[in-house]
Length: 155
Image (cartoon, rainbow, N blue to C red; front, side, top):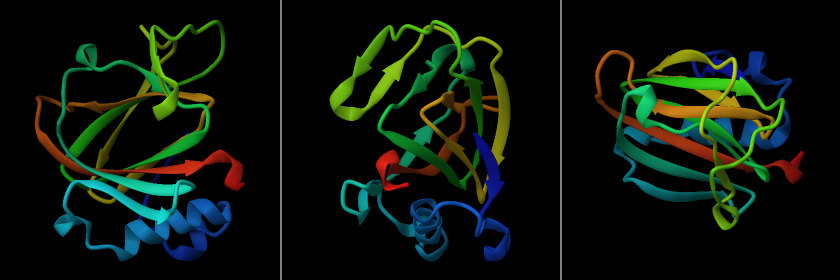
C-alpha cells in the first residue's frame, strides 16, 4: 500500500511504474471536481477511472476487499474518507466475489490499520493489500473520489 498526495512534485513520484504515473497524470490534469460520475477510459481496459460520489459509512458497514488483476488508486477529490488496509497474509477466504469485476470481499481483515485521506490524497492498493475504502472519519459524509484501476500486467 502506498499513501501519498498529488501535491508532491512530479520528480518525487518518478520512481513509480509508468502505468501508475499515467494514472496519476490523469488525476492531476483532469478537472475532476466537474467530471460527472462514471467510467473514464485512460488506456482502454488497462487503465481506467471510476468517478464516484459516495456517502461514507461506519467501518462496520463496509467490507474489506481485494483484487487480483488490478490495483486501485483511490483518490479523494473533495471530502475526507478513512480507508482500512491490511497485508493479504494468512488464510483469507472470500465470502463474496465477482470475478468479472475483479472484486473479492472478506468478513474481516486481521491487523487492519487505517489512514485518513483528504482532498488531494491517494492510496494505492495492490492485489496483496486487503483494503476497506469508503469509511467515515467521524460521521457519514459525502465524498467525491476517483478509483483508478491499473491492470497489473501493465508493469
